[in-house]
Length: 215
Image 1 (tube, one colour):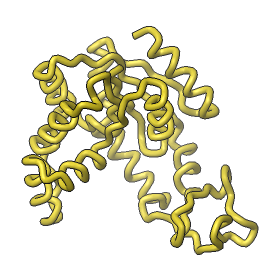
Image 2 (cartoon, rainbow, N blue to C red; image 1 turned 135 degrees about the vertical axis):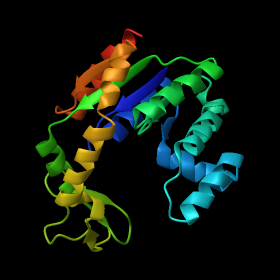
Image 3 (spheres, helix red, strand yellow; image 1 turned 30 degrees about the vertical axis):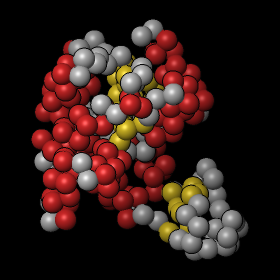
């Protein structure tokens, strides 16, 4: 099963991808993971990516696409994969399509998780993590101890800078400008299904399972 998961930050792509990994025994592949692995492995594309990253520059599309090509040829992708966070733009979608043709692979489905912006703000601004043990919490859905410290080790909880409301709203704007048009692209390819991501995790999981059963 070869799947792309679309959706804004906080839509639950990572949670759903983890469940799909267990169901289909295929890897979840994110852009960040690919870049870090390629750099660590010192692959040809990883070496190029490191040059840009060390200079504080964005890694250009041609290098990212090269890393995607390397990753999709790995043995654990023989039975499929879940792309999470890639492609982000129409240009990347076109490049991915060409890579898949070269590798004799074909996408089975593109699932877009739809979540209201205000709900995403609540989801993301409420996230906290322990500075000592790394345990994650949510002020509303999975609250820490009564004194606001880590329930596991008693450590101080922190909020990531990119989980602050202003940053989140900026990220949403960037998403809708650059990535939301991918829905139209994959609808035109006959691959897109929109799934309501507002419900319980298990309900969203069942909805995605129904989509993939028809593939």
